[in-house]
Image (cartoon, rainbow, N blue to C red; front, top):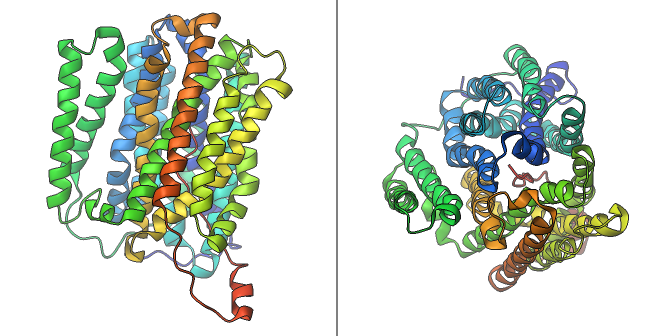
Length: 492
């Protein structure tokens, strides 16, 4: 069972496989966006401080990020459909636990468990398409998956706002149960099993454990430090545990014959700089998207549905422009776009800092969203393809996973530290005047981070040498493009 059948895009089973993978990844994508919309409602329900809301988000992202690469290797070795189905069941059951949570502590615990299911589920959908479809139809299948998953991401905020308005915040989690049951049925009936025949030996479980300790310790210290004091015993213990986890992770990954995170890839300057830019830009984006729905509801007095609708331009612009951005980078090289794109993202965040309290969405929030979306469209495609192109072709899958991992870690750390840096603490987020001041500071901080990312890219990224070709060949080669696997645009 090393290889799966070569499915055709227009075949009945091919369409069912696409449906199963889109619904599964869409379930995770929708969950990633709706939770941010629900944070103010959850905060009021449990009278929770900002630190609790941070844990609702970071508890999920922590386990997802820590286990993402490990889960991908599980699928390669033990069956991609099997691990994907386990992830679906795990995600649906933990979603039910989130929905029934009687208090904030239970919700956070359930979110941590839900992140494990998302880690098992997330790498599987694209890997299944890659392994199942014939080479001639693989691009079309992945393109359909990308477009439909993008639509799911766009629908997430609207769906979340609607469910909160007509039912309860708990339904943003309950909705995953029937969707998960449908995806499981489709996957078991139609998705062929596949494995990597070259995957030998065990999985890097020790590396995954040390990675979890690293992220958990650092995240705990950054979230709890402002409230408890960075000199308190528990915070120092958390940060010390993170340091020990980091040292252990580096030693294990260096010595492992099949490391979860191959450190040798970072010997390539292009790869290292690209992932450093990814860390900075996605940290800024993750921190901003954590605060934007809260600010829109508390300061601008949007309903949950309206705050969800306000984010739609991000996805729409990305859907229309990302492929064209990738084509442009293929022609001129990635340096210009990776240098300019983060600066445009930062400009959008800076404009957003002045939208607090605006009565008009069209003149206040929308212009900032459009500039932000344009910057992301300029940046994401060349950033991802540069990360993949800097690694040897046989490591393209690992390079993509590492870039995805770095993006999620950046978002995780930003959500943990940005509110404190901006002066948002305790119940301050629930008071419009206090939150407005903190939000302005946060957007300036994130805008500055993006500008730094652009400068780093301009200084460190190099365009690949362009081979001399016959003019006729050159004209035709410039028309080709390939599907892109970008890091996630979510704030969970």
